[in-house]
Image (cartoon, rainbow, N blue to C red):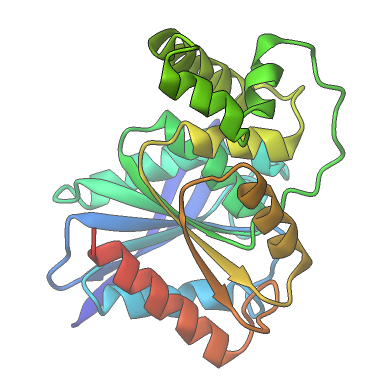
Length: 266
């Protein structure tokens, strides 16, 4: 399928952001927003984003990729992955303005950008899916503030606790409501360690989740252990031997095919 490209400039917090949209000739109603990982450079891992966008646009999927503040061609000071909500929100608004026929969006992120996507997704009802590649959650852990939410976060993977819920030994409605509220609070609380914030954000996200892991990446291994421990419901795909940025053509093509099939099948 043929597609066109549009270069964009839009604003966030007084800074000018730069993005590109690949627009298919016959776009489907579900688009993909690619969040840039500031640690990469144009001819390295970020080249994958351009090639991915062209592949997906050829399948009818509109794709927008953009540089958040302090990254690439956009203005502003460098930002941590847990401070990108406004940038992603501004890009979402621009994406829907450019593609008025679009109904919903899947967020895509690699490394720190995957963590940013996980923290944002539950905040925006227009986001119906996330694709997370080798999420990087290695941040110094701040001293967590004692609060009931820590209790609930710690029990996400305990089957005994949920058996009590199922047998009526715990007030299900009250517990579920309290859990969801504490998860939302934890996901936006910068006194909570980043891995737990990411886990909380994904746990209260109602959409679809695809996690793509490189078999040779340490970040992928740590994230896989985290979601396994807490039994997070998601589609998990591992690309054997792939590194953090899926740098080879074989790995890149495998990622694109998995993503394209997943986006159009639900």
